[in-house]
Length: 170
Image 1: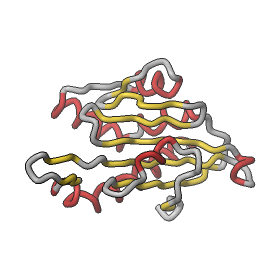
Image 2: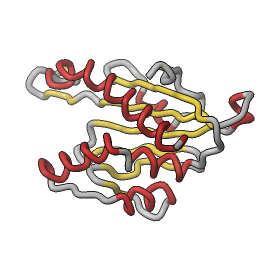
Image 3: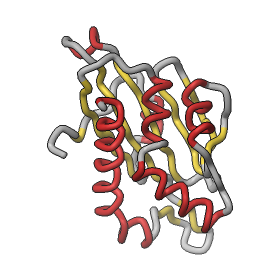
Image 4: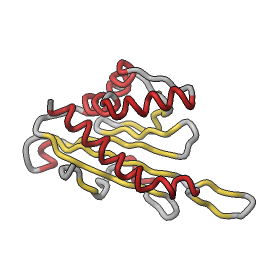
């Protein structure tokens, strides 16, 4: 998975508003050899075998089912919800999803070959976790659960992007 890199967010990234003190955010990128539309990327990302496992978990634990058809509709801009997320913002090249609890954001973006100074498409995937304010303590925190799972989250993010890359290159 050496082809996945930790990256800085592009200047126009919809995820940028969540890159601030107290929030967790990340950004990973990779290049594919072909031209990939944003719709194709979104559909590929949410229909990989790895993400399908997450979809099963979301259905089982939270009652939030989803299908491959719905993933394609999301990519095509035909729906504003998918599994446990809703579209917070969307543009021609990117989508920012918010989970139903309002705590996490998932972001997908493509950049064209001309922006990469080469052939193919650059794929970006990032996420953010918003801290929860405690009236009892008067402080905000990401929570012990996230701190325990942070290393898993990073590895899983890389695996998800790599899975999407493999699907798009096959």
